[in-house]
Structure formats: structure tokens, C-alpha cells
Amino acid sequence: MNILVLGSGGREHAIALKISQSPKTKNLFVAPGNAGTSQIATNVEVGVNDFPAIKQLVLKENIDLVVIGPEDPLVNGVHDFFLNDAELKYIPVIGPQKAAAALEGSKEFAKEFMMRHNIPTAAYESFTAKTLEEGYAFLESLNPPYVLKADGLAAGKGVLILQDLEEAKSELKSMLVDSKFGNASTTVVIEEFLDGIELSCFVLTDGTNYKILPTAKDYKRIGEGDTGLNTGGMGAISPVPFADSSFMDKIERQIVKPTVEGLKKDKLPYVGFIFIGLIKVGDNPKVIEYNVRMGDPETEVVIPRLKSDLVEVLLAMANGTLDQINLEIDERAATTVMAVSGGYPEAYEKGKEITGAENIEDSLVFHAGTKLSNGKVVTNGGRVIAVTSFGKDFREALQKSYQNMEKLHFDGMYYRKDLGFDL
Image (spheres, rainbow, N blue to C red):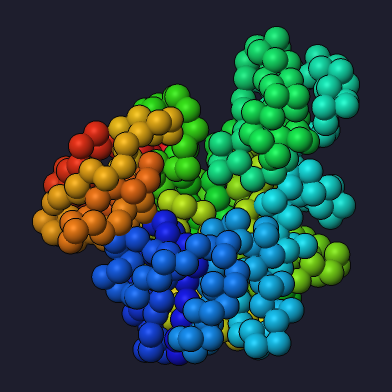
């Protein structure tokens, strides 16, 4: 088969690598891709939201299957674009249609969905600039810390957790009135703070059947000890040690099953990955958020643990036969550590040469923000490169990732050295 993966990050590199290993794969394309995907696939300079150019590419290369990596094109309706086009409608797309992608595209939509289907989550209310005063009053009714979430997509940075009431009020105003996150914060969801430890659960669904992939835990803050600004993710660990079989049973019964059944009841067609951001409060799981694609950097630890042929799994999702698939998972732990550009998640420079990747042994290297420039691999984003390793437990895997990370170099390179500190 000829397969196209849309996206350019570490998630797409991990997915592309697994697809490239399938005997069912003939030609693999990644658009736009990065320096890492160029080693295993053909990169094509096409933007993930340039639907007409994607159509041209799909027809020119006789693409048989399209896998959508990031959330933007899904929220913008790329799957619907295929279904509504006479030449594209028979080509399977892995990723939900636009109506279902609102689970990630709108925090308010997701909250209403959870309430409707009795899925455990934090109490909340949503506000706009017109109801700012009511927002202030709602904040006054809560105990700190205060959680403010921009309703729309804000590249993983639209959530604020604040200790001080006056600061929370001022941030609410800057989100709603001063458009701190642009259109993403025309509506803001304020919710109760849940105290616990977070984890991510990944679900594959064909719209009726589902399979649960290994759990993972990512580390969002730039600083060690989970301090400093939020990032797109500084590393991840899989499986999550505290997610034992009885806790996983609760997740499936109280969250996964009602989510998949809820999508069906609400007539929200969904073929793809569901990322469920969870928090363990006491002994119970609650949903923090949904994403309508795999997480990044969690993909870099979850997908390498999948022993099954990923293309067979994707086809079963597209064909509605996921119940006939038996997922084989590597029992070992996997960890990934993300190297980022100096200054990230604020201003940073691009175009720094990356050296040392060829010296890495016994680990997988996933490129995120990289590109080829005059035959050299250079930085092209905030999160640059991830090193994934296996071990009998996460500590052994982390040790290997850190040893190999020391072999990499680029100007301003930074990574967290304390992953797993809270486990």
C-alpha cells in the first residue's frame, strides 16, 4: 500500500517508523515531515491544513491510506474534505470527522459531552467577555488553585493553574477581553482543581469497537520538579507504574466504554485515536481532557511498545473490524527524553546544527523540530529531538535514554534530567 502520514513532529516520526516496518507498506510519504522522517519515507513540502495540495499529493502518488498526526487538520475538517470529494471519498482516513474532533477543538463541547454521558470529570462553568463579572463571581466561589482553560486550540499552552484569586481574575480578563490566546480564548472554561497524579490513556476505535493501547505519563513543565512554564511535553514514560489492573478496569468501565458509546449515541463518526488525559484522585480516574489524536511525546513510548503490525491495525480501524485484532504489546518499559531549544517555550533560535545522533546505540531517536539544510540536520522548532529506550522498568529505560542523550549536541540544547521523579 501507499501510505501518507500528515505532520512533522516526533509523533509522526514514531508512527511513520512503525508503518515503514510493515510488509503491507509499499511507499510511505510524510507531509511535511522532518529530517528524521526523510530517512524512512519521502517527505513532501505540503502543509497539514493545505487540503487542495493534500488532494493533489494523494491522487498523484495513488495513496491508499491517510494517517493524520496533529489536531489542527482534524478540527478543520480534513476527514470531511475527503468524504465530500468524489475522487477522495473511498480513501480511508485515520482521524475523526470535524464534529467529533470538537472533543479537542472545544473544551466546553468536551465538558458537555462528559456531563451527558456521566463520565467523571471536574465541576466547571464557561464564560465569555459578556459574562466576565459572573466569571469573577464563580472564581470567588472556588478554593485555590484556580484552573482556567481557553476553549479552543492553543498548542497545549491554553491552560493556567493559579494560586492567587486576584491573579486568576486578571488572567481571566486578559484571556476574554484582551484575547491572550487569540480566538482560542473567546470562551474560557473555569473548573475545580483536581489534586492527584496524571496519566494518559490511548484508545483506538473504528467507531464501534475499541482497543486500549499502553498507558503513558508525560512531563509538561520546562523545569525540573515540574516547575516553570508548560511545554508541548518534555518526555514520557510507559507503562504508568501505578495504573494496575484494577485501576485500568475502572478507566475502561467508567471512561473508555462510555466515551466510545457516547460518540455513537451522539452520531459523532469516529475512526482514529482517542487520547484521554486522566488524573488519579484517590483511587478513582477522572478526565482532564480529550485529544483526538495521539499525544506527543507519549507516542514515542506507546507506539514502539506495539508489537502488532500497525498497518493491519489501522486498516481494521478503517474497515470497522477492530474487534478481530489482537494487540501484542512489548512487556518492557519505554521512556523518552525530549531535547529542546534554548529559550523554549518562549523565544528560541532555529538552524542550530545537531551532531552525535550516529553515536546513539540501543535507543530510538525520534526527530521533532528538525530539518535538512545543506546536507546537515539542524533545529527547526522548540522541541527538537527525542531519545526513546526500553528497560525492565522505567528507571533502567531512563538511564539508557540519558546516557544516549549525552551523545547529542546542538547549541542551547536543554533537557530535563528528573523524569520519573514523582513515581
